[in-house]
Length: 219
Length: 237
Image 1 (cartoon, rainbow over the protein chains, first blue to last red):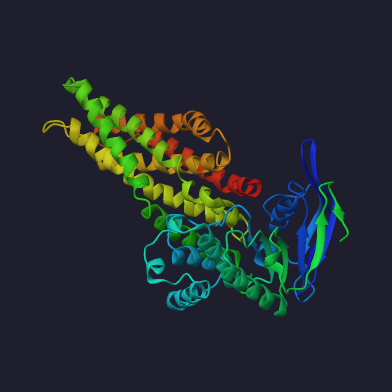
Image 2 (image 1 turned 120 degrees about the vertical axis):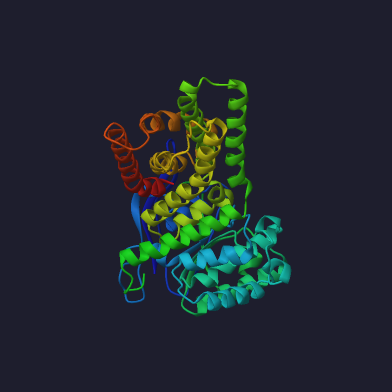
């Protein structure tokens, strides 16, 4: 369970969030919407641990009911304006780095197998792409697919998704919806920001609106 | 974290991942390795042509001044780009959202910088000696290589710290050298003095040893500062 407890954050003379609270339960998807500049992405950065809160707290409770020491073990974050990919390296090298950093300790052969399977799932397994083809040459949508491939590989129960379908075509958006659906059915949870509601089609979710006035508006 | 994972195994595992991946990232963009070496070679050649025939009594001093200044500038060029692969596409921030050990990250960056710095420093020392030495006055000495490596060990720690500090600064290109040069001057002075005494006296002895200890002292201070401050810098982003 993810809990954001009375969190406040702002820049000098520019409050962004004030006493904001949110609880996301196992199997739940929360969609956060609101006008530009309302603090949606800032909220994601706060939960991901990229910026410290001014006041309040953010905690993650494991299935055994214990509050975890370092919530980053449990959370995978897909940011809005970037994909977190090494541009000069190929898809396998990129995914391999992130998978290893997550602590997966498969043998190199098994790891490569699972990475190739994931790339295949996302339509990125053309022999050219598996070779020394740098990610910087990918299209916007291909880079996004590669970033999303990190989600399932991470095996984390909590996903933070900031505009996850940006640049994706209809087929890839459908693939994304499917993995998100499976993730939620498997007991995972997710917080998502998306101006494109196609990403949420047929999924049940709780809506939360950040009104740009430092707080939330009930849906 | 797996319950059997101790902080030390986590550190070691992540250190290897960061170092291995860092090397791959550098090799994927060879220009980053080749540029400082070419810069060094060009500078040494230009110095050599501009100075012409140097008085034999001054050869050793000219060699040292030229080689260390060239190495310092080339390393500055190299260090300022340490985080280039991480800065692009917000990789640095993505790493910060992972359960990483900042000490493992720093140590891997530091090792990578020492490795890459050696690939610039060693050719500079060899080529500098080659340009100036004569049959009667050999200038190349493994003791000078040792001094150079001790200098590099301190500069590398400072280089990683400063590169992290200026990672997100808009005026990064200006800020980095402004901070780098004053902090590295003591290391450079100790390295030049130690090398001068070694060349004069043919080996490390009681005269040059204090300068070597001073160099080691700077290495310990800068590396300790790096280990202590890096987690804070990474936390702040």
